[in-house]
Length: 182
Image 1 (cartoon, helix red, strand yellow):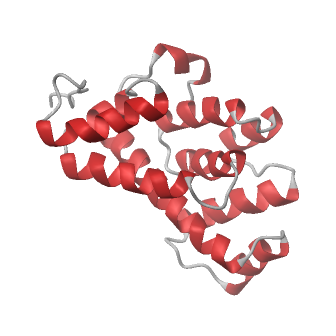
Image 2 (cartoon, rainbow, N blue to C red):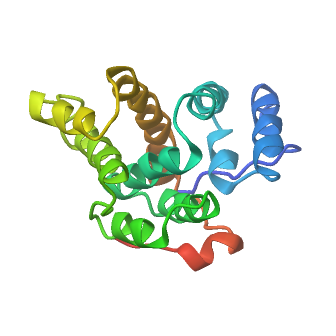
């Protein structure tokens, strides 16, 4: 089968161009995954909407990257693991926590570990959390509204992880240092 195209602003379908411009504004470039997403204007526009909600929510950037990196590993998306490794480190997340998540382990910090565990559990249990899963998250100092907000971050990562796994975009040179295999 022929691979998926990696669109640019010039080559993208007209209905995807405004979303690609938004991606370029936020990232300073158009990542290959976004270029692949542009194949579907519905997908790329939906991603931008969810992305905005995630990054305008209650969590700090290191916490957001904790969820996104955990999800990328859980969903076995090599492209997203490389990206979120770079972004987590850039956001100041402890390199030991990043290494733990990349290895499928929980970070040693109680709060970051609880956040990572919730993200992984949501995916593995397909959202069917039990009381113990919820209590563990709340006991780490999070609230019920933040538990529900994590679902938004998981939704955003599901879009990118599934797209990455389906389209298999090449890893950008700047992400090569963070390449990952399961």
